[in-house]
Image: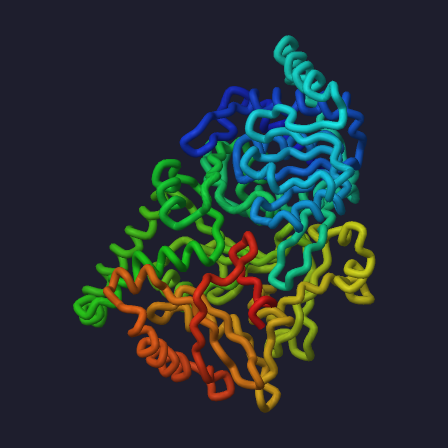
Length: 546
């Protein structure tokens, strides 16, 4: 269905916005579109003289930055396959990816060089420092000279930079291999073709509220497709100005960046939104005097209006919409945001779809849904009644991957016999193709009388109770147990001693079970001493605790 190409999507905005700012490192340097083009062309020349051919793999290991984005575009527009490596991967996983992907060149941030063990990834020929595009290591003794000469050539021949000549991919060519870091513990390389990238980007151009002079803050990990597509690849095609946040994205750091940049579109994961709500909004609303005031119709409207204003200001004050994805949003948080008419929406996708499956604008979406099936995809629910009976969500269409790199067995298991991608997510739909997700099929627990129990729904309720930072609900000897990491920061603020935790957890257990059907009642809360291990998307690695 797509008539455009990746080359067209990027050549036009670069030329049209040549002197405008393209990338900035937050509290760091700026790069115009023309400067980015010069870097891209210089790196293209370096790849050429280094013997890189169509389909060869080039990996990028680093945190979000202007040079990360520039290096990524240089690979994507050269005909080589880009392999983004999450900086949070451990040494073993990092070298497995470099070796398994057959990466010949690696761009690596200086602070992450110790994660590369060339004895474990013998196919790597050259390591380029991402911080300044200099050679850190190479099997080629002339690599440094070749790289310097490539940059010098386009500095001397500045006019030829505008002849971009980006590589024209075929629709079914693999452009990106994205290694997932899922909650199941298995790392697979998802092969994303040109048609999927183009389809996702064009959909975003047609449906998301972003214009050429708008600003974006990139803080989600760009080595994951959610942040990569919607905080980077899509905005660049419009000529937007992107500020990269390299620091770990705590709510405080993020809101500081929002206040300075004032972005027009915000992408987030639920964890960030829920923390801001829990730390900045909930304590005020739970004060006794506020509870009384909220019960008075006229006064409650004024209070909610002020709360909305405070929330909008927290995110910079001029955004059109916040798109939340990557994990389920707490039902209580969603309900409250709807009540104050906050401009947020929930989307749904997966790496294997590059990533988009469903989305709807904030003023058009349906409550509790994960948006509407996008117009270039088909969906079916594997149940006898997709409108009422929960079943696995299965999809096909433009956005779907080619398969898993060098893993035919996993690819076969990912699809049904008639060609539908198994998402592993459970849900229902409605007549207008809105998607309502209930949980992951692998997380579902079978109740004592055969009921389907979705632990994510119980965890969402538990996370909103006092002094609970995060939790995992699991089945222990046919009884539901909640593992809880306490919110020590809130305890310190309220002057709560650790010895008092047992009392509060017993109260929380009573409150929780009062809201749940009998078969979903949790029998015990067990405290854990350390935060749960998470994926870079901040989803808990459940397999380690269940």
